[in-house]
Amino acid sequence: MYNRTQNENGSYNSRCLDCFMTIASCVETEQELEQREAHHLCPEKVLAQLLAEGRAAAAHAARN
Image (cartoon, rainbow, N blue to C red; front, side):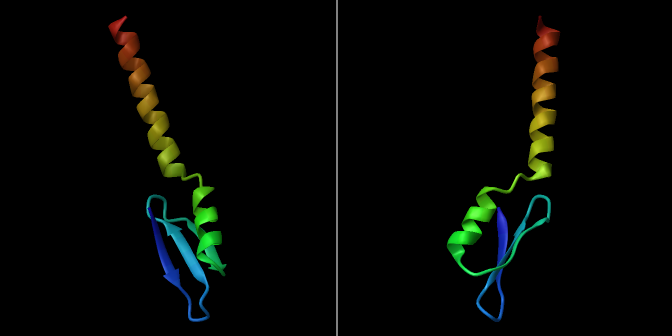
């Protein structure tokens, strides 16, 4: 999820609501904004995924 704002000159800014990183600043079109958001690798989401995988692997090892 992203927080989008529009500047006075009509350009856009976007910020990731998970890690609060600025994804785009002064982007001219919504299409370009969507592209930048699609390429964002959120460190918070990556860390959460790694921790979940680690817990799943540990649970699997404990069962075997």
